[in-house]
Length: 334
Ligand code: KG4
Ligand code: ZN
Image 1 (cartoon, helix red, strand yellow):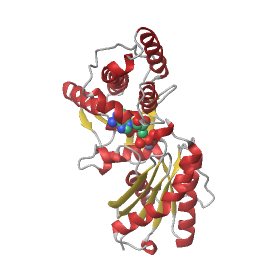
Image 2: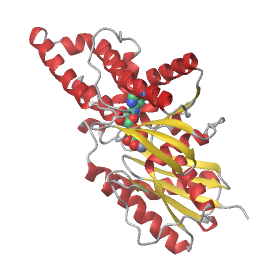
Image 3: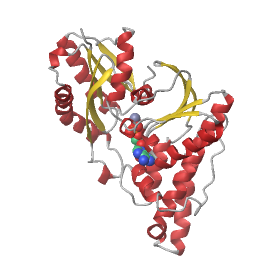
Image 4: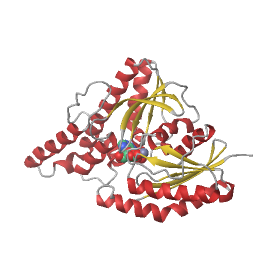
């Protein structure tokens, strides 16, 4: 009997559902909330309401694409955190209700473990152990991945996440939310050496991005005193220089951890792993160091339910089920 699993992701501003059959992805559907763009950032209450609107159509679409009826499902996985609590509540209540009514196991998934699983949905997955840089809108971590569900955090940001650094500085340049993809695009025709921003000096494998944010703000304020059109005139160079700064810090720490922990299989994951400059920089460094590098397909980098399904499947194999009383947690640790 094949095992059909439905996974649901609602941790931030994407409502997503995916179906896996015996560990193979059969479908994944997603609605990205565009309402936040004009508001300059995610409005948590609005995100929760939008999840409520989207969740049933998205789940229906995933089931339809997979060509199965809801009664064929054998397990329900959902993101239990970390994330926005109101958003997590919508997905978890839906998952719990469905699991109870179908009388099938419920599986709680850690959102960051799921980002790592984007690597297992690629044609060539890394062998264990490997070092993974997880870079998203809410998190920046260096993780040693020993098995599908065995991951150790060896470094993390002490303030802003890398995605947040992209989004907040992009906003200073007048770009819409989320700023990361727009900055990546504009940076292609900018000069990464046009402006120099200092790199944070943080011990070990930890990161810091709040200094960069402040440096960019003061720099723009100073320049605008001389030329009020400064940002407009130099937007692409600013994008390229800020992006280069963020990526440099990420890659320096990745390199330090790989050397310190003597790991030669290196991977990146999370929304910021979609960044073309980061992808290119990591590939080049890997070549010069003789590392094997693994970069997930673009569509699995940003939030989606396919990666939630992958974690849930491995938990299903271990009968690692959640009680119906489980409550999602914005700071979920798994
Ligand atoms: O993983 P994700 O979809 O959601 C979270 O779990 O946070 O990551 C979203 C983040 C946003 O900050 C967005 O600006 C950033 O990923 N991002 C990018 C790119 N695509 C998405 N940052 C830089 N370059 C990109 N191409
Ligand atoms: Zn995410």
